[in-house]
Image (tube, rainbow, N blue to C red; front, side, top):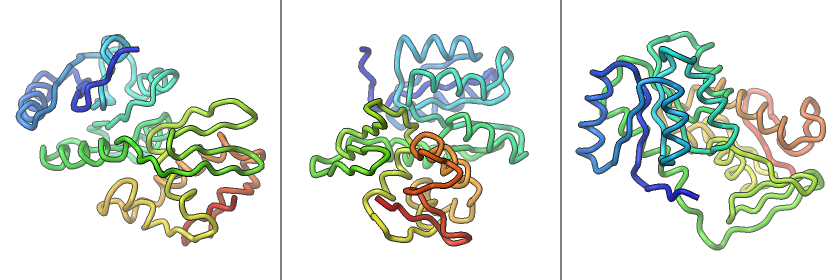
Length: 230
């Protein structure tokens, strides 16, 4: 198992100017940076030298960025920050649906990118020791080990899915508003992005609920927020 360096970033972009700007900025802020000009190189690099976070341009010359995310998610839960020149929200939802953790549209400020990066790394930091195990009749969650199992099998979670679940499970039966979840998981700039949550809740239900269309544990309070029912 290759060791992941806490400040290592893999930048995947075919635009040499962006790659150079990101490399200089990230190194100046203490990150180590690997780069890849296309999707295939990125997947090889991620397998050989696991990074703490991947910054991925969606418009790659060989395979679509969303395909890179899907293939990476088959074996890795590394946090993925997507860069896109396309403002269409379909694009955004597709990337999130494939398993990306956050999204930034070109042109972007380097300060904003660094803030997103810090937020992603903070969300995937090591958990504390005093973390309970929560058992429902459908799945079991070990908050300390960040493990979810269902019918005796581990359920793979992306870091973002985990963060949403973690907040809900630590507040059983409490209504958590969309704003609270968006702010805690993505940051204050996202308080209005309710469509982010819909995408992730659908994924969580698909993975955890016996009947995703008729959830027993991850409940929606229409227009307000969500509630975890153990």
